[in-house]
Length: 464
Picture 1 (cartoon, rainbow, N blue to C red):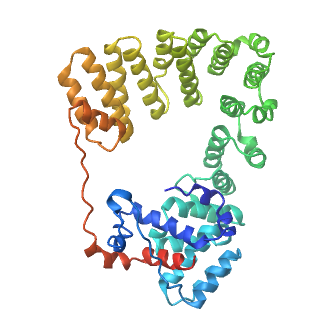
Picture 2 (spheres, rainbow, N blue to C red):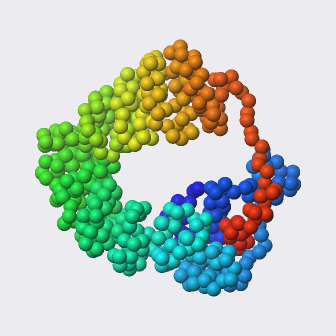
Picture 3 (spheres, helix red, strand yellow):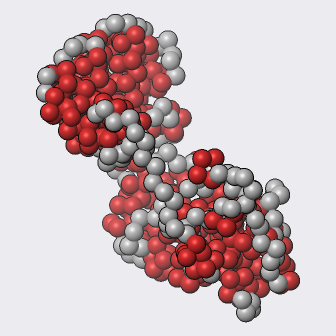
């Protein structure tokens, strides 16, 4: 469901025409997620359209625009008067009109609606938005309005908030409530694991800075520099030791592609010359100077938990592809195969690259099989389940294990709507196309039409 633009800038939607129809489309997305029957089913017999082949449907919009009070409430929302619209809707006798207006007020103006009001509406109309959307609106309301510590803990405690501002608010509330260590744990996680705006930085340092250690500031610095956030790192340099500063200066020079980078890397304090950030910086500098094999060797020197581990795979992937282009296949394999821990999605990708290079460029199916099996063991999505099994089948075929290959192809072929699922069906000699018939919908239509969410959609569509 593609709603991120609305989440980030909900007020912008009101500036354009067709506001309520776009809002209706959001609700339609929720209906699909809930497994609703075919939405445009009554139009199946209209005209000469074949919906099975073209997916084209003549849509019809209800002419029922609702009561005059409903229209007035929508106008208030369009004017940005969200609290007034919500309050007006409280007096509606039609629950569909009431929920539609109140949901729109929360969706577009969550910071203007009292947090407990949002909670009550979420309990009254849980189908009108995902739990995440309600939580985001709740957090926005809490952080945009004065809320005492007891209420913040009551409303946000128990699970980590989604937004940084709400996490900071919860940490501050725990601190004010006397739960210092609990508040500092949250604040420390915010400080060391997020980029933060200048305003958020200042708030965290002012509120929690006395509870942070030099190690906390160093952890933040490493996180920022692994993502080339040099200015943020420079703002907290005063909290670092001279040895740490030597590595920070070198890393910043590499990130900015400064001609001073080699000199500053040579001057890094010996105490930090085995730090992963040092090896990462040395490897990037080597890659930029065309020393690709040396870059792989430098990455392989890093040991222990890798900071921002995903970034290490992106660097290795870039090296692997450049080495393939340079026909240095074994070095390309080492670049990919050297990544064995990190976010599972990145480890899946690394094992695919390593297995593919071993099979296609090194002629080593045994090694490829090892990587594709590892990839398969971590795959949870249809796209990666099919990809790992298809390439495992290819490697097993080359290794002479026909039975094993057929089994791998069969597993992938179960997902016949995916690319590798279709390739696997072809490998099995199956060129047929399975298209399931449309489900019977006519009997479900009355119940579908009566659903509150459907009625809200049609009200919004009718109002443009």
